[in-house]
Figure (cartoon, helix red, strand yellow):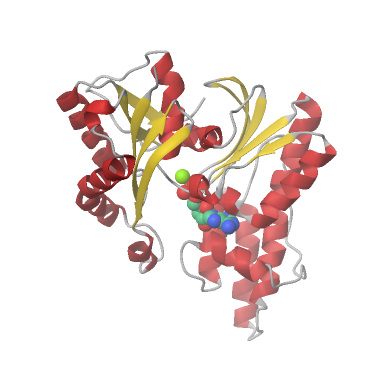
Length: 333
Ligand code: AMP
Ligand code: MG
């Protein structure tokens, strides 16, 4: 019998719901973003985010069911992101999921948002194991080995800032609007690598570090501005991006070499970056490894990936009780 999961995602500034069939087929996906509102403040304001989720959630539910041409009664389970993210935002989704689960007698499935990003790949190509998973987002930079569904082993993670965070902060210091990642990428496409930023010095480990690079960029901007020198923003963006992405490439290359695994999955908002995709494609070709990156719609925050990640839990009957709590910082392993 087919499984239909109604999935809910509200961990940051997108309110999203989806109906996903058998963990892989998106029957309907509805997303509303608060990006324009938060852009005015230069970043996500948690209080505004939770209020806007509250306002949006029933509308998103109606829209999603309408698109799916289905009713809640038709669902096999209700899945929801419970962590990590903004506490107030997560609570809106989790409370909605609990109510629907209780009212319609459907099992409740709690999904970790980062695991959701990885399982987004199942919406396009069925993941086969073992695989390497690189998570690159606004809050995380991690390299993992997956031996099987929900079997994670962490190789390394960031010791300080996440890569997306570094993109956002560099963007802010050169006056680009939030979110900075796509804007830095656009500028970088027009620039040359002329500024010499330091590479992080964690070479023989799988750990990442972005705060040194970020500080080097910020210091350079401040020093040049004080001296009255003009900054070539395009070149600065390019020089920063080259180092930031090269750091990922080096660690993934080490992992491909040392583990012998022939499959790489990339997940999280930064995987929308074209330069990252090109570099990783080249690297995977060199090691004859398969590269999986979901299309843009599934790279950024969405509920379809939550439905995909909920499916293995559904099959194993790993359901949550109504005491399910949100958590701002839950690790995968
Ligand atoms: P997430 O945390 O998964 O929601 O992803 C959001 C993060 O991805 C933010 O830090 C964005 O700046 C970053 N991001 C989005 N698009 C790009 C891009 N094209 N290049 C680099 N970073 C990006
Ligand atoms: Mg995310």
